[in-house]
Image 1 (cartoon, rainbow, N blue to C red):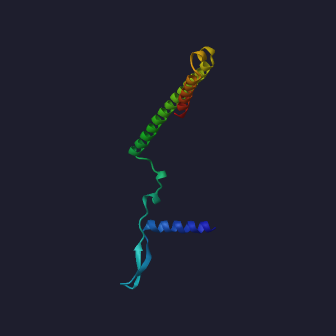
Image 2: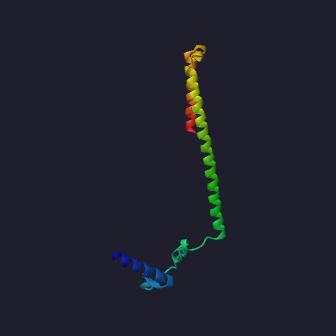
Image 3: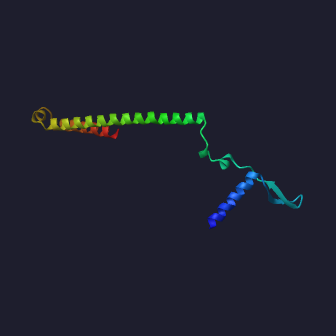
Length: 133
């Protein structure tokens, strides 16, 4: 039940603040009495949460613009992803073709082992670079 007591005290303080009640403050050495002061008015957020109020037209338009910008950015990213996936598939296919060609007997006779190794390494590097994008 402690939470209830704390809640009641908090609500009572807010009501007093809304009414503009005066409370006892610190000691006033000139008058040799305790001072009284008026409680400050409630902030707008305390009176009514922004959740319960409608957006202005300007705020709504700003929000719509932000969502439209995010949507176009998402579409751009999806397009880039599709392109990257397609280029990765093409690079893998090309790498597989280079490996298959390097195994063919007529190609082996035409090129030296060192040249074939360089060609395979270049194809592998291109394929790996396309994966990183």
